[in-house]
Length: 152
Image (spheres, rainbow, N blue to C red):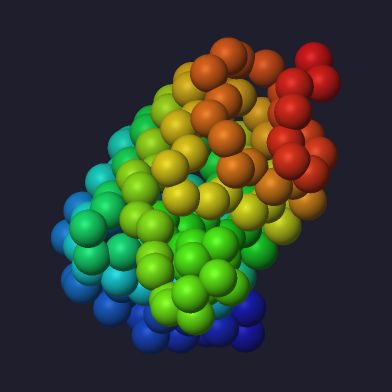
């Protein structure tokens, strides 16, 4: 029964994603509910996987790059676009900010992590669960917290 459910999830959820986004064919999916929204501006490395309920939003003028051997935990949110709150509050206009997100090699991203637009994560980084990454991570190590900062 478990194999049948896995096959149904794989066939109806992940095969359409892999056919729509030709650049993510090497990406492995670990669980159900993965959603990738936006154009085909995504590149992935070898031996990388995404866990269940992860959401990736890519803007029209931005891209997402995932390196080799990257593990993305469950319920992770990765955005390359956001609304500029200052312009929205002061002028009442929706002005979006689009910036590329780059994730290096050998990165582990824990569950429930938010990664905002314009973030670059270097190689050999561990991001703890429930963290918010809004600035670049330029040094290898363990990062956690809101906002994420180096703890080891």
